[in-house]
Image 1 (tube, rainbow, N blue to C red):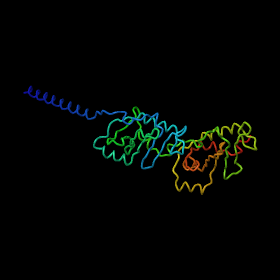
Image 2 (cartoon, rainbow, N blue to C red; image 1 turned 30 degrees about the horizontal axis):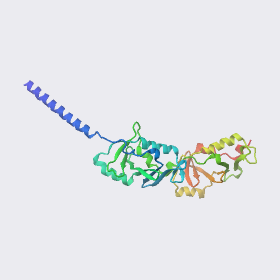
Image 3 (cartoon, rainbow, N blue to C red; image 1 turned 60 degrees about the horizontal axis):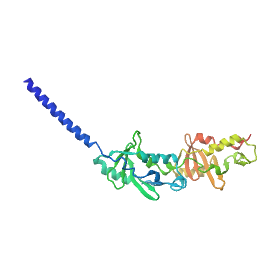
Image 4 (tube, one colour; image 1 turned 30 degrees about the vertical axis):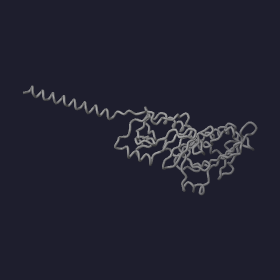
Length: 308
C-alpha cells in the first residue's frame, strides 16, 4: 500500500517537474528578444551637423555654424550639452520592445507628446525617431517615425533617463557664459551703478596695462576683476514673465556692465537684487537669468576698490 502511494507521489513529482520545465522554457522564449542594437544608430554621427528637436513645446534647431554649435541660429550652444547629446545618441541601446498590450497607446502618446529627433547631415535627414518616457521619467522610449513598436532604451552601465537630453528647453542648450565673445577683441568695460554714480568706472588699455582712466589703479585687482567677468556664467536662463518685465520698470539695477569689442559691438549685463535665496536676477542683453551670488559678489566692486 505504501509502495503504491510512493509511486503515485513519484509520478506526481515527475509531472510537476515536466510542467515546470515547460513553463520555464516558453517563458524564457517569450522574454528573449532578438533586437538590433543599432536600430537607432544608423547615422554616421561624425557627419551630423544639425539636430532638430520638435515637440508640442516648440522646435529647437541645434546646428554647427562656422566653428561652433548654435541654438536656433542665434545663441552659442553649451559645448558640454552637445557632447552629452552625441554621447547619448552613440551609447543608447534598445533593451526590449514595449509589451504588446501597451504598444499602441504608448506609440500614439509618443507621436503626440514626445520629441521628434531629426539628425541631419548636409541638409539631408539621415535618421529620425521619437523620444519620450513614462510619467515618472524612469523609463525612456524610442520609436522610429515609420515604426509601430516603441523600445525601452538604456545606456549600459548607467541608471539614466535616456530621453531627458531631448526634452531640454531651448534655454537648457545655451552656453552659460554671459559674455560669449573672443576676449582678444576686448576694447573696454564700463561699470555703471545707477544709485551711486561715484562708483562708476571705465576699464581700458593704458599703454600696455589695463587700468581706470584718471586714477592710479591696482593692476592685480583689475586683472582679477576682468578674469571674473570673462568667466562669469549663469546658473540658468529663465522665461520672461510679466512680473520679471515689471522689475525693469520698478527697480533700478544694482550694476550694469557693458563691454565693447574692437568692432564697437556692445555686450551688456544688468544685475538686479536677488530673486531667490543665493541667486541674483540678471538681464543678459534681453534674456533673464539666475546667477549665483558668489559669482556676482566678485564683480560688484566700486571704483574705489581698484585705486592704489
